Image 1 (tube, helix red, strand yellow):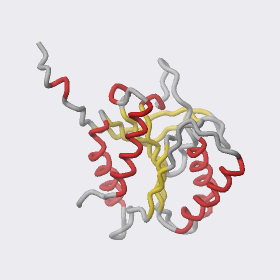
Image 2 (spheres, one colour):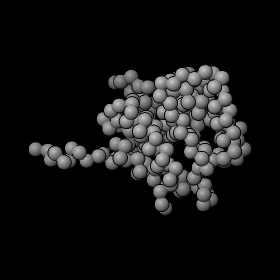
Image 3 (cartoon, helix red, strand yellow):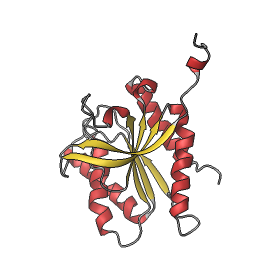
Length: 197
């Protein structure tokens, strides 16, 4: 018989992987893209994910502070509808950060999220023209519903071809949209505080 306490233990697993996602035509080519991902067993695995991200960036860095962002911007919306004029204004402001300092952007990555589309558009317009090595990362935080598979219909996401990392939490651990919203907020907080070396 199963131990009742073992059922309450959070899944702390963390799996680095490359996953297929369905990209919608949001100004980029529609279809399937492969995206680097960290798959979390539960939201409690988030500290391990933050440590993994920073340690991988530190390993690739040629300077001491390289790989640490100057600014983390959390672009989270839930069912918002934004005018084209407002989205253009936000994208223009975001572009100035992307060209001026090391910036990480956290979003849902869903194509129906206007702020995710703004972030993706800004990356697509700015990164190819930067002359220096950009400390830019777009972190898409969502459930495993964004992973493309034959058996289920997946959520369409924004273009993941440029400096994008997918942070996916297993669906069983994030039952509601409120759970995912909390995970996005917690991700911004965890990434804003690099773990000790």
